[in-house]
Image 1 (cartoon, rainbow, N blue to C red):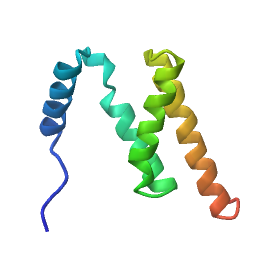
Image 2 (cartoon, rainbow, N blue to C red):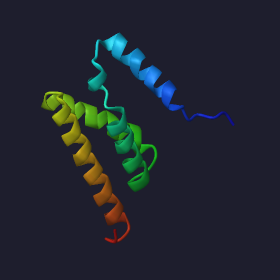
Image 3 (cartoon, one colour):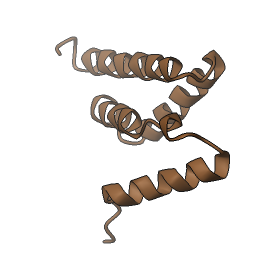
Length: 94
């Protein structure tokens, strides 16, 4: 099996490619926030739900204006939904 986990420097390099191609500033791609979202959703919902949730967070944040606060609010909302989903599917126990 091929190792699919990227070392941090590879992720940073990919973020640089994306920023350069789309004309984004370094703060426009909150890597840690997106990874935290993906981890929470993968744990509380399902692994395949993580990239979908990251896409929805970006869509929602963009529609709200795309500021850092809009991104943080979208991520917080989706993380909260994932936690609630986990509690609901576990019969209400945290």
